[in-house]
Structures are given as C-alpha cells and as structure tokens.
Length: 184
Image 1 (cartoon, one colour):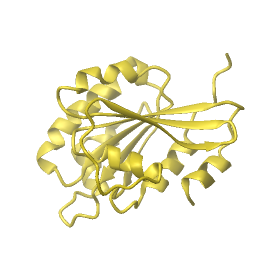
Image 2 (image 1 turned 90 degrees about the vertical axis):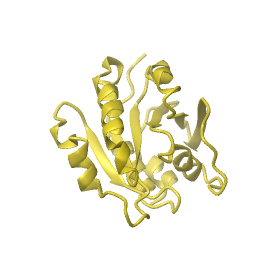
Image 3 (image 1 turned 180 degrees about the vertical axis):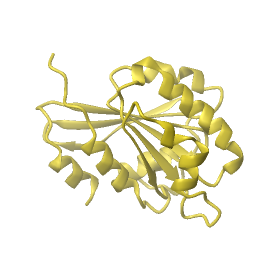
C-alpha cells in the first residue's frame, strides 16, 4: 500500500491540511525520508541548513505537509518555532549511531515534555536498518525508555530511508492515529 492509498483510506474533512513535523539529530535521514515520500531522487541529499517544507501528497482536498527541520545542534533551539498546529511528530533516529543514543534520548525527551506537543502522536523511525550493525527497534525502545511512555500515542517503525523500506508502514500508522480536525 503506497502513500496515496493510505491517504485515500483516511477520512478527512474537506480542505484538511495534515501537518507533520520531521525532527531528529543531524545525519539521521530526515531529508531522505522526505525525498522518498515525495518520490524524489535520494542519491544526492545534503544536510538541511534550516528547513524543508513539502506537500508530499494531495488527495482531493487533503494536503499532507511535512516540515523537515535540520538536526544540527545549532538549529535545534529553533525547533520550537514549528510546534504550533502539528498533527504528528516524526522523530528519526540513526539506528547505526549508537554513540549518540544518549543525545537522541535527551532531545526526544525534551520534545515529549513540550506542552504544545503533549497530545500529538509520535512516530519514531528507526532508520538505517539496512546496515548490519544497526540497533533493532526493540533495542532502541529499551535505550530510549520508550516503553515507559504512558501518556501519549507512539510507535517505533524500523525503516531504511535509502531503500524506501518501512516508510509507508510508518505513514500508515500516522494516518490511522490522526485526531479529527477541530471545528473552526
């Protein structure tokens, strides 16, 4: 099932814009995931200096907007500028970068403590699963204490952004966990 099929199955009020915030440390694979979602070439991806915004799919009146914000330490303080009106948070982890799991845990913990993100479902992409030495989703769940999260909807999805594996499964989870649009 592709992204378009997922969106076709999602019942949304007319004109709904679904906003997804894509965060994670530098070199986690956020931009590669965004490029896969928008069917772009992933062979020449450069680090994001600031942000990328793409409407990656449109079905009728549904717009899926993904905000890919750079993960460099100098950019992270600006993440909070993008928390308003987010429907889903996607946090991307480089599963092969085990030396940075503590740093990932701190950043994810700070995001989960943000008042503006409290009721937002969280998808964690455990990226780079195509590498032999990558940590499994289960290992990442333990290292980041995800099993202790009781007050929010979350899911961890193994993926390989480069090979476009597991991404649609994650987006399917996102679509099935969206809150109904609020009445204006």
